Image (cartoon, rainbow, N blue to C red; front, side, top):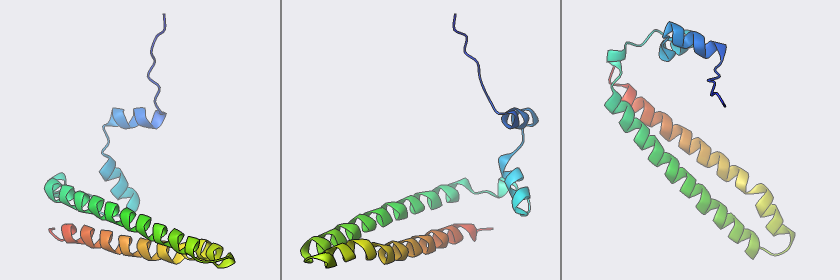
Length: 116
């Protein structure tokens, strides 16, 4: 009785009909030259992805440790100063961790992008 119907976007149907390549389309939108599929080293890309994942886990662990330390400092600090620690101290910590993470992720990306 119930018939299953596949619902897709008109753009998806168009892309499937044309068998368009997403990387070619994205490169065209970004104004970059088209990348030949043979030029992509999948093993290097996979290694870079794994290194970036490990970096993300280490950054998340560092964030948890830093926030736990700030919470402990806030609990041990008497009165309103404890609230000030909770309100103002996390932002510089977040900014520093974010800057470190982005710099390291870009360095990993550039190490594996030099093989061209």
